[in-house]
Image (cartoon, rainbow, N blue to C red; front, side, top):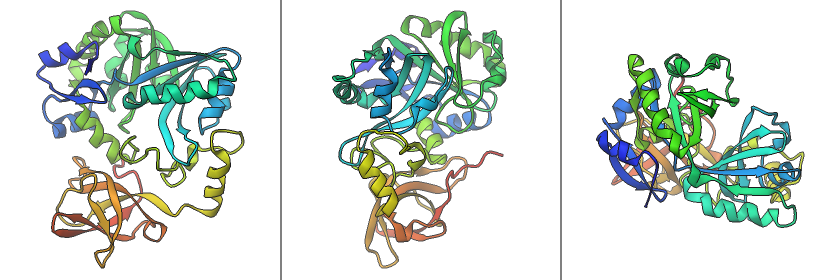
Length: 362
C-alpha cells in the first residue's frame, strides 16, 4: 500500500486508516454522519491525494484528448475544467475524469486512483501515432478537497484571489496558504460547493495545517472517504467500479451529456447508434419506502420477485434519513415514479425511482 504525504498526519488525528485503491487512506475521523453533516452545512477538508494526474502538452495535446475522451475538449479555454470519460473499444468506460486546460497547449487530466496504470496505458496507446508530450505526475502531486457552503468564507484569508469569483468548473493558478503556484479549482464531488487544491507533495503539509487554522472559526473538520461516498451518492454522482466500469456505456449510465458526437473519439460510432436506438437498460436512483439499507450487489426485483437488476451503490442517506441507491434496470422500470423492490436478506423492500439528485440544497 502507498501512503499520501499526509498519512502520518491522519494517523495522529485519530483517523481510521483503510486500504483504498492501493493507498492507505483515512475512511473516517469522528464518524460518517457527523462528517457528512459538517460538509453539507459548514466546511470540511478531504485528503484525496491518491487521485492520478497526467500532463498532456504540445501541438498534438488537444487532438489526443479529443480522441480518447467523450466530451468536447475544444470548448475548454484556459482556466476552465470539464467532466468527461474515456470510452473503451467495446462500449464501456475505461474511467471518468476531469480535464483542465492550464495553458494554450497544456492540459491536466485527473483520473481515479485505482485506474492510473490502466488509463496511462490506454491513452499512451492512442498517442503512439500522435506523439503528444505525455507525463504521469501522480506520485509528485497532492490534492485537497475543501468542501461545503462555508468554504469560500473560510479560505479567503489564505489567498489574494477573490474565491467567490471562481465559477463552478473554473480554476485559477494562484497563491494559497503561503505557496505561490497552487491550482484552486471550483470543483468537487460533494454537491455542497467548495474547492479542490492541487499542490506538490512537499507543500501539502503546510497547506493542510493552514487550511485547518483558517477554517477553525468556521467549524472545519477533516473528513474521510466514507462521508465522501455518502455525499456523492446523495447527489447521484457515479463512482467508478460501482456505477460505471468497462461493461457500462456512458449512454445507459446517464452520461450522454458528456458524450459529444461532433467529433471522432474511441467507439463513437457504436455509442451514437446506441443513443439513437436507446439503451436496453438505464442507471436509476431509487429511494426505499420502508426501513432498510440497500447495499451494493443486492438484487433489484419486480413485484413478482423476479430479478431485474442489481444495486450498484447504496446507503442510508444521512441528510434524508432514508435508504437510497443506484442501479441498472430495464427501460420499462426506469421512469420516475416506477415501483421496484430491493431484496434485503429475506425481505423485498419496496422502492420508488426518483429524479436525481436525491439531496436538494436549500
